[in-house]
Amino acid sequence: MVAESVVYEGSVEHKVAHSWLGPKKIRSDATPCPPALNDPDVLTEWLREAIRQGHISEYWEDEYPKYVWSRQGAEVFEARLINRGQGNYKGYPLSSSEIPRELP
Image (cartoon, rainbow, N blue to C red; front, side, top):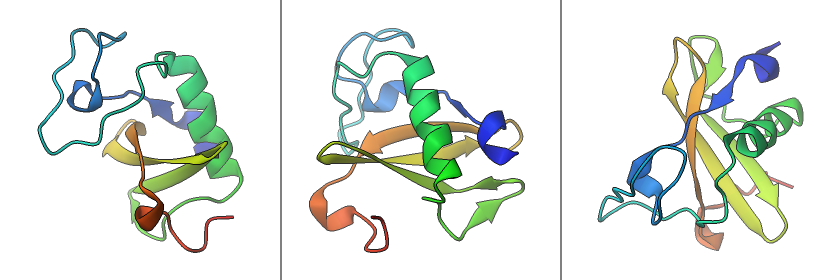
């Protein structure tokens, strides 16, 4: 099953604080991730649960959806596939105008 094979890898390009990935290296055009989101196991489970619920894009790269969306309280996060050979994703919060309309 696809959900069980994906992993949240993350990216320093969205980090505003030191994380399990190392020192912050946020890009000037990147959406910053909340510093409290610093547990890759929790983020991987969010990713997997969103896939199980079908919160995925219609676009796939090989065996994996290109985008996955996870609603956590009032926030929605988008995960983007960054390694289609291994099923690794990075993620970032979306503004209200960026949230897909079909997402419950």
